[in-house]
Length: 234
Length: 270
Image (cartoon, rainbow over all chains, first blue to last red; front, top):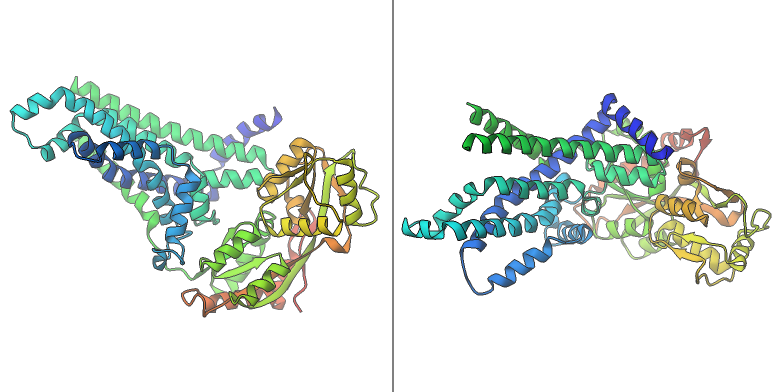
């Protein structure tokens, strides 16, 4: 009881104190996860739409794999990226291990399947409704991708938020590839793990509440933008 | 207008996010080290002094000693500061490091619930204490993660002539902090390095029950990694760090570090 009571006051003190270290950790968390979401979405949205529109041998297999990878354990993603980026690995020469870039790569690997799989499903449903109309207008499949993605944008916003949620909440992957280096690769989740292992539970939970507040704020912002746009369209 | 503003805001947010992945050109080394040195706050105390003297930033990846060796073996760290002398000497013999030196020491302590069900408080030696825990089959939380502390603990069981196993011996496979959290939760005995213990806040019923045996000595060593194996590493900068640790300034900085009024690391580079 006391630990959680302390956590709320600790969280409040953390937010009000606007301590430089905390600010750095919070910004890095946001920067890494937003970059990962952006890069993942750039690939996954067209990929998901393409999977919805084309029929080709092996398509079902790809869909099953994407769906399965939505549950990819973060430590496995982290370990894979670690082995790739390690000096002894195939991409070692770039020296990316223990940098924010490595954390972005790991998070992209985690959320790309989520965005692609959910986009595929949404676009496929939408395409079912519009298929005849688009066919009668003679729109090629390639041209249908941007049209359908734009039309599905409100649903896809939720898909992207799901990706962002997974990215900002995971710790297993960024711990391995980032190394939790103070001031360089320490993000909210790894800081929480560190404080927990120091036995400083109120501070750890306080950091958790700050992270939760932040994610809620971002979701509220996205919801507002989405709702406003939807209402304008009538 | 509204749309333009939104687009601009989105773009600048993206730009700000992407700036995190830009490479910086500071002079730095990556140091693979143990959780005890990081979590006790030692690095927070001594690294600024080194950076001020040499203009080299040290980026610490704090992991178990077994993992630290693995990171260095793969060429992902420029320098190594760990606490497993036997393992360190093997590392040099295998050709991954060219030099190892004593930097500092402290000791391990045996911790347990205040009512001490196995009665180790008046044991003569740590082997005796360990035997009593095994005889009483009192819960014992082991790191089980091949860290320096875990390796030292396994050597002590061997010296005590006990093959630990069974219901009471719980291998957790986690770091020192999480192991202490778990031990506190299940009132188990646990062996920890003194630095992590002093820095640890969630003690509940746990307290130090046995300490002071020579067998509990805990030596930290710094290693210079092999230029031949990994030519890409920052060997010059790493050498400066290694030499600073052993220098009078470095040793003094270690001696000056205190937590909760206690000196946690004792310099012993000769």
